[in-house]
Image (cartoon, rainbow, N blue to C red):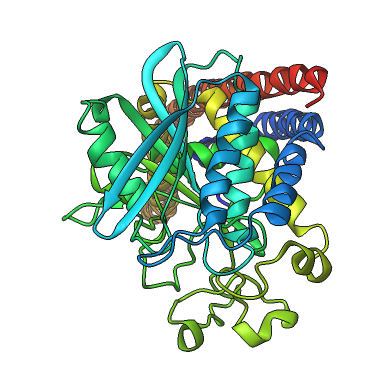
Length: 477
């Protein structure tokens, strides 16, 4: 199921309430038609602007990794030559873009490794960390995690000379597979924390294993002791951007109990950032279960999810990472076009996020969600009031009818007609109708305001993305 943004919730909830309450329902229909048409045109335009732009360079990077650096192993007993050479290749790529590359050497228990990172200053010192690990299991390591590295390199190249609201830091982590996220753990505690830089980190975006899975997923947030979802604004932002671009970004199905949707703390390098209270987005391509909740390969591979329902992968329960299917030629043969599409979508979504996120984004998203919640409550309250009014009117009608019959009987017996009741009832009815119409008009104006504000914000975001896309085309990377 594709994620609905809270802006859409505002539109649907408030517009439904206006149509329900207002006698001028045609006006509401016109507003809905115009807004939907405008948004559809903008979405199609934004999507067309990004068509074939994103993921192209990433795929070329992935081919280079596949051909030159398979089996990038770094375990307690063996640091392969390929993992070392892959790190040096990443460094040379970043330097070719114009960056001065920093290295972070670490030792974690029996593991040693090197993180590579570059920093692109923004208008604010608040920093967005975008990360991916470059080591692998004893496979070609295309999906896990040559795909994340490839997109990260494309993003670093793309944003080298682009003005952004926040400072960007692109980090290539070592030793994720065997070292319990050793590279990212040491980066958080022996680099960021030791140098008093952790407070400057606004959020973390982690890209891991996005090449082969059936669906692109985004996870984020954390539940507190009271069961309230917190620090989910980066996850919300990702879904806003995906909707703007007309791309699908999925979240954990409710049937998955190992993790509580939409969060996923364990599983990749975003873990230690989340543990220190840094909002995160963890992006991967997978398929947790079928739409009806069935599926999964927990018995086969001790995990609650599998990556594809394609029958060609039945021997591994649908799993790609850590298997013989984590191979570029096999993925292209069995899932034609999948790798390119997933790289494109991930690159486009993260690009939109980096262009849009500022130190004020969290507050803006919170305000939008509060407005959506208020609109939902207003709709519910309006519906209840409408039902109560109908019941009240029915009861009033019955009482008036009963009283009228009784009055007519008495008047007939006394031969003295009573005509005063009708004007009073008619006056009350006119007053209530006028009051009801006034409330409906106010609500319609409120709907128009919210829709206009939401649409304007989305249009600004789309314009930024489209403008960036046009500039990106000219560079012809």
